[in-house]
Image (cartoon, rainbow, N blue to C red; front, top):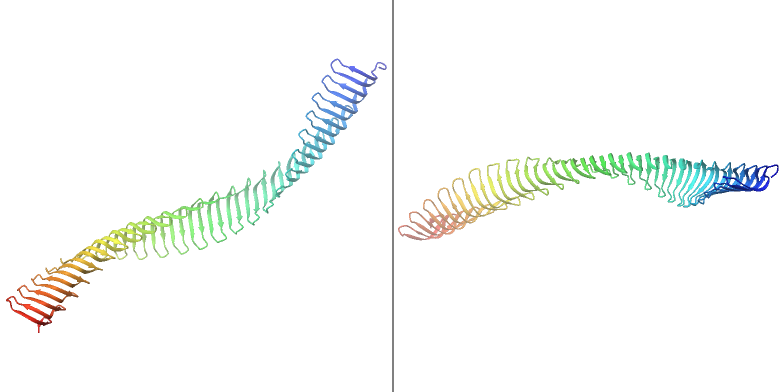
Length: 559
């Protein structure tokens, strides 16, 4: 001590505040010394008038340590600060704070090299992350703010404006895959106006919100296709026009990148649809016009014509009714340009079920249909008044049916391939009747014909004529039993007159011709040749009294 003051080298211990060992001057730490506080803090270095000043090292109880310049008890100048967790800072200090230029390395591997102010990165600096990411640029109060470039380890690169550690303002981002974005940013996300380009040639120019295309913008694909309109959260949504590379164009509403709502689609081929969409499909109500002139207006479901609608063909034919998956199925009315009209059920574009068909000439059919053909039960009414009611197959009367003719005649029986074939009964308005077999629309086979006057024929028929064996009973009581051809007695037969006369023999073209026997009621009898209903040729005439003449005859007279 000098003059009662500590001076020189020495050690001083406080009762409750540790000790100091080192140089003194005028009762103050001065020179080199070690100060250990009761708290565990420790300083070893230079002092000046009781203050840390010069070079020195300070260690905190928590393990932190500073080594470097001091000025008036403050870390000021060059120094190194090592945190207990391994983080280090080497650089400038002012009044105990990192201010100036320095390098800070975190225990995690992060590294900053650049300017500081008040313990925070401030000014220009570079920050490197352990994963290889690196930022170079402006800082403010510990955060990236101003102009700067961030390069990611994968090769992505952003160059532009920053605010509070976020990309904010104008900037350009080039992705490692070759894509790039240049435009506005907000809170680290693309927000505002910008242009995005893909390596493949796609491009979007328009508005962004929260990193996604949102608002108005135009997207151009590498193949030349474009979309110009509204966007929402990265998807085409709202009103917009999409032009496809093949020349197709859609103008209308969108949702989630899909056509949704009202819109118009025009194909390069000339086809056109105007109406509602849902999930990228025609759905709801709409009108489709084909390039050839056909047009459909009505309901749609999942891109198919389904529901109620009207189809108009270019040739003038129209259909109004039900559709299922693009085909006329259900109930509808079809009208042809020719004037034909069908009203009834459809299936798979064909008349199927119950329906009515009307022809321009006035003919009408009402009944069953199958695969576009009259099949089942039905009634056909001709314009002239004829009416058929019965079975049908493949457009023809087939099976059992009844036809009433305008002239009053009636046929009821079997049909095949639109002709009377099988067994049936025919009646005329005048009272004639035929009951028997038919083939190809004509009386053929076995049958009985009854005339209105009571005459009958029972026997064989061929192509509408009495032919073969048969018995004809005339209204006057005459009876013929024998062969027929073309409605005429022909061949062997027996004719018995109501008067008692009788002929047994050959006929030709409805006349006695050939060989035959004629017997009179009085007992006279001729046996011999006949020609065109006359005794002609050789014959024998026997009178009732036994007289006999044998000889030649001509035109019924003896020669």
